[in-house]
Length: 65
Image (tube, rainbow, N blue to C red; front, side, top):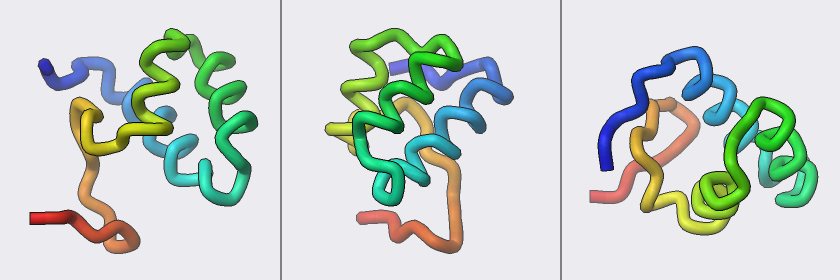
């Protein structure tokens, strides 16, 4: 899968995903829809995070080797 070229959109998606645990998946899915993320992409990023295109390094998230 290719890396996303819209950095602003990628940051918005990352923020919603980061909040998903606190908000719940349905709220996160609605927020992703509001910023124009297609349904199939929203489902994928919320339910299968290892299949995401690009994950930004964060001191709060652990990366698996």
